[in-house]
Amino acid sequence: MNAAPSFAFDSPEEAIDALARRLGTTGIQQVELSESHDPTRSLHRRVLASPIFADRDSPAADVSAMDGYAIRESDLLKEGPIEVTGESVPGSPPPPESVTGVNRIFTGAIIPDGCDRVIQREHTDETTAASPPDSSSLGQIQWTDKAKTIPSGANIRRQGENLSAGSTAIKAGLELTSPRLAALTNFGIQLVDLHAPVRVAVLTTGDELASATNSDQSPLPPWKIRNSNASALLGLLTNQPWIDCAPPMHAIDEPAALLTAVQYAIEHHDVVLMTGGVSMGDYDYVPRILREAGAEIVFHKLPLRPGKPILGAVHQSESKSTLILGLPGNPVSATMGARRFAMPLIRKLAGMTNWEELPPLVMLEEVGEKTLPLNWLRGVRMTRPGLAALVIGKGSGDVATLAATDGFIEMPPHANHAGPWPYFAW
Ligand code: AMP
Ligand code: MG
Picture 1 (cartoon, rainbow, N blue to C red):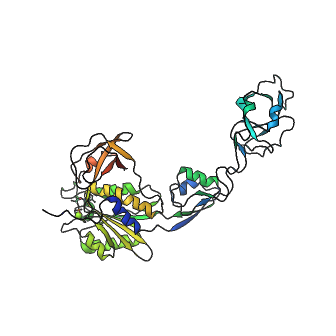
Picture 2: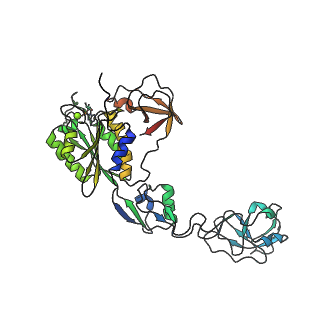
Picture 3: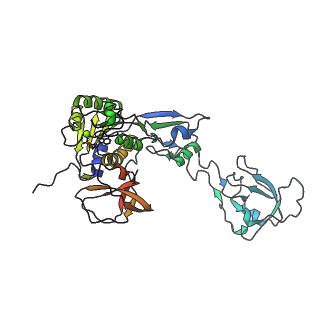
């Protein structure tokens, strides 16, 4: 009996970690925000390289949390009708403390000096005055019994209670999501340090690709195939503001041509995603060429289906470290491999401190009897929140069935129960 094959790593997780340890982050770009500048355009989902600090207290002063009346305790002793002598409105400085009556106040407006609570409008009787004493009057009110129970400090948002001036509002290494853009604008930030987008090259290989010979033969002869891997990989990489994806490149199965393409891709990019040429066939030159290009092969082959021949490598130069993934050419292996291995590592290079994936867990509707002694990536369709159905294709060349999936789950070796399993959405 053959001995069980030995792999450098037992799981995708360990293989990803081994590559991550060898990778740095991209450099820093400074972006200046002018008054007229729309920060959402240039900053949305970019990765912050330095923390954002609060330029002033939040809130900047004691403000009202309600529409009502800002008062001192002694105002509650006034027997109605009580004259409304002024108003504190958002956007204006507060009126002076009222001696003879009370000040009306609106949500977000500043608490006048000397006041210690806000009585909500609904706890007052505002209909007491049938005819106001004069036309400039702001009205009259009377306290309800409920108003007299409102304690000191009620309905006031205290200066600095959210954050005090000088403290960290957003940590470095986070993506500028919509709430973070709001925080950044709230604190008047004018200069932002961002990580440069990760430059990613997609390099497909193989003589069978129609584009390899610029074939315009029509119809396509059956011995030629279309470059579906380039589309799959670009589909994962485009529209991520932290990725700068180059137009796809292709190399034929010829060592010299492949070496030239690999060297160029490594020199000008932070990540090189290759498909094809990593198996044991006579034309599978990728491992040898990567060694010639000076890359360290961190692993070649993992206990994985689909995608067992996958190769992970890192090229170190004085200026940068470049991640290279050699994905098998079979479309299902290439697409799942790019999603599972490349995406978290690109997040790491992009400067995200939370680059490691926390995939949601899903249960399978039905699981079947079959098990594998491998980590098994299985295409699924989501049917209900937290529930998925397996989408079973004809193998790793079956793009048509893959197109029916929403993502895939990952099962460890020998597993055959319904889950919950980590789910990787496309
Ligand atoms: P390879 O890993 O180079 O042995 O390729 C395995 C199989 O994947 C080939 O027989 C092709 O049918 C297919 N293949 C390779 N490259 C691509 C590609 N870029 N797009 C679609 N299919 C591909
Ligand atoms: Mg090939």
